[in-house]
Amino acid sequence: MLTNLKIKDIAAELGIADHYYFSRLFTKVMGASPNHYRKREKR
Image: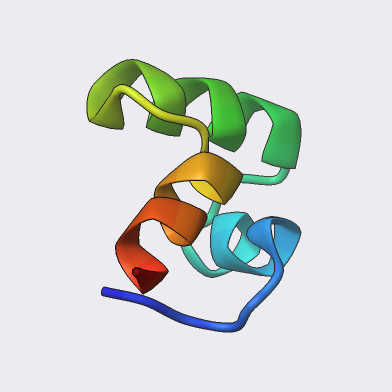
């Protein structure tokens, strides 16, 4: 799913206060940082 929300806003919606933690967790699970994933999926 793609969204234009900022990473910190996505983390907040998921109940994760630290968006740096969310980014690290996302990278571990998805194999790419949220920004790289977003850029890759826009193609």
